[in-house]
Each structure stands twice: as C-alpha cells, then as structure tokens.
Picture 1: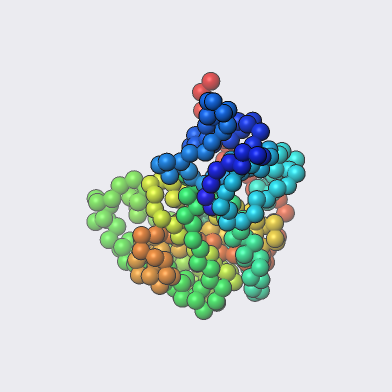
Picture 2: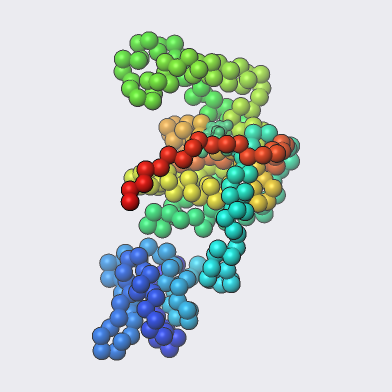
Length: 294
Ligand SMILES: Cc1cc2nc3c(=O)[nH]c(=O)nc-3n(C[C@H](O)[C@H](O)[C@H](O)COP(=O)(O)O)c2cc1C
C-alpha cells in the first residue's frame, strides 16, 4: 500500500487526517485552505489511519486490498462488550491434547488472516509464517528441537563447574533440582515415543521476522495472540511452544532446515489442532501488581 494524495473534490477539509496521522504528513496549505499529503523523506508507516478516519473517503491510496467498511468500525465497543471479551480471554487455554484430525486449510488461512491485522511497531508487519501440516515433518522438527534437551542434559552434568560462569535466571535454572527432573522426564517420554514438543498437533506455525531491537518479539507476540484467539473462535486449540521457538532462535541449522532466510529469526511457534479436552472453568491468575502514579 502507498498513500498517493487527496481527492480534492471529495475532501471537506475536516482536518481529521491532519489530527490522526502519527507521522504528521498531512497539513493545510494557507492560501487555498486545502489539505495536502507530503512525504518527502518517505516516513509514512502505511498504518492506514488516514484511510480509516476520512469521513468522505478522499484519501487516494495504492491499496493492496479493499478498505473494510463496516458499521461497528465507528464504535468498536458495540462489537463485543467487556464481559464477553473477558470470557473470550479467560476461556483461552493452552491446549496440549489434540484430536487426530487435520485442520482444513481454509481455517488455517483464517487464523493467519487474523494475525495479519495485529498492530506492530512502526507498522512493520515483518511477520512471515511457515506452516507445517505434514505429520512426518512435524515429527522431524520435534526431534530436532529435542536435540537441545539432550544437550542440556549433558550440560547439567557440569553444573557445579558452570555455576561460576553464569548469572541470573540461567544460574537459577542450572542449580534448580526441578530443571534436571523436568529434563529427565521429558527425555524419558520422548524415548517412549511421545510427542513431548507439539503434543501430536496436526499443524505447527513458525513465525519469523526481521530482528529490530526489542520490538520484534513484542510484535510477534501480538500477532500470535491474534491467531490464538481467532483459532479459539473456530473451535481450534493452540499452544505456544517456547521450547521450539528457543531452539530455532538459537540453532542456525534448524533455521536452515525450516527455510528461514538469513537475517530473519524465529519469534514464536504455535501448535494447533482440534482440542481433545474440555475445560469447565477459567483458572485464577496472580493478583494485579500495579503502581499508580497520579
Ligand atoms: C511465550 C510462551 C512460551 C510457551 N512455551 C510453552 C512450551 O514450550 N510448551 C508448553 O507446553 N507450553 C508453553 N506455553 C504455554 C504456557 O505454559 C501457558 O500459557 C501457561 O501455563 C498458562 O496457561 P494457559 O495458556 O492455559 O492460560 C508457552 C506460553 C507462552 C506465552
């Protein structure tokens, strides 16, 4: 998409584009009182706020899709009230038991479409997705991630030496007896033929993106959250697989195997499938920790 200018016949000079453009690319020309769009330094982030806010649809853009005009766009609070939104959010669970049933491709595409409309820093939308639906490939992927576990088990044997070289959370994890137990249990299950990584999910989505400061991870998190909620609305369960994400992020060989291009990295992995589990209530969460500065 590219903003090309303003249709002066349609423009009513209401100034909404001037007020709303985050990059301040709209301004009023004195003599004519006409609003103009100028972007000499190419800093438009293509957020489309001008297209969305113009009451007469006067902004001219080279669009990649039709604008989506619907009544509730003017007042999104009409779409879903707070109570129902909270139910939607609180009913979302990480699903780790899936039916042995593939997800139709159209539904995977619907989930990806929901991710597409997530907000992102400077509207970067740097997300690309790799969708695995082939059971054998998913198993190979899981096995490759498990290699990291086997390596970790070896590393743990040296923990009394390594503790002098690591700090913070890594040191805590290294010395926590629970870490060894969790790794041993996961390896035992893996050796017994269980899919300890993706829980026999029929679909795995890997998100890769350019790495831009601290924001790439945040942007990926929002996109995948859109996807998780969209999946839920279709009766599809999801589980974010941080372990696989970490392995892909760290292992170049794994990125190569997945076909993630150089210069990009993995910022999220989701397992998806039809749930083979029902939850009757939403579990509690930590109390809010808020510091009000008034
Ligand atoms: C970034 C991230 C990484 C996660 N990694 C894993 C994982 O590797 N394996 C897993 O089974 N669950 C994983 N989860 C799911 C969390 O364990 C789960 O969200 C948390 O326990 C709360 O449960 P709920 O999602 O059902 O509310 C991950 C979740 C997030 C957000």
